[in-house]
Image (cartoon, rainbow, N blue to C red; front, side, top):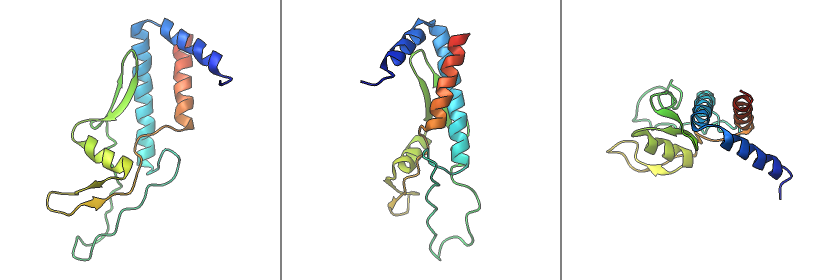
Length: 149
């Protein structure tokens, strides 16, 4: 048994004592701030543990000339595709629409076809969404601030 178990039980009771509207506000605030944190990390091209993303594969000679000058996942990290939602029970940060599949392929390092006519490619794992210590502290901060109101 964890030494924090009584504290966690008491905290769960305090959160449960909030009204449904207050819990929803807290969860949506949490989701929005977590989304901002995830977007910042993706912009810096880092995994949740702080390691840099695996570099892109070099394209064959017959392909495009020059290098790709755009950072990976620039559109994917926008609010249009990265949705934050808070309910009474949960705070959710997820990818919306058709980009979910692409995000899952990169998150888990799966195999996929880059376009309809190409061969199947094995992608490196580039974790887009994840939790680290900074985000845990952020969640604690939000919970404490909402309980103190």
